[in-house]
Image (cartoon, one colour):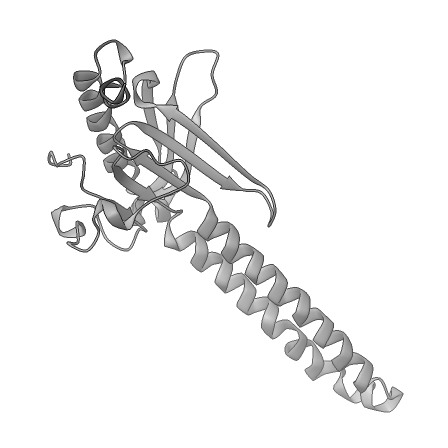
Length: 213
């Protein structure tokens, strides 16, 4: 169970260590985190990326594909020399690595731009679909009905990452946090923010905007 903390505190969760009081670095203040559409009175509680292990698996795969042309060259090198195809082979290898770099850059971009944010007023799901397409959805904390966590497999269990689903009204879609670190503790953070929001916003009325009027 995560200890009660101020809703102004920010947790940056990358999976590198458990969520704890030690994770709340003094430099991570709410002024460090902003996003398009953030309200002046809104505080970021949790900022989430996919777990680092997801990125590590991609890197291992890319290292394998980077070595593949050179591994392939060893058994066919004599054949290429005899047929005078060495230049063609290295030209195709250069094209291959251009595509490899593009694919690697794409994977890194998708990892860094897929982000989930929990504030003291709402949950925001920002998913990148290619370089030029992004979907941003948000959900008021007052609309949360249930939160479920799924951690499947030995490695996810050992490293503590999994999927978190936020259920709203029956007609609305679920908010799915995919492969996030420490999903059970993130669930506790959201439930705490949910309870605090209901306590301070009776009837789901935004007191800050009402005060400005």
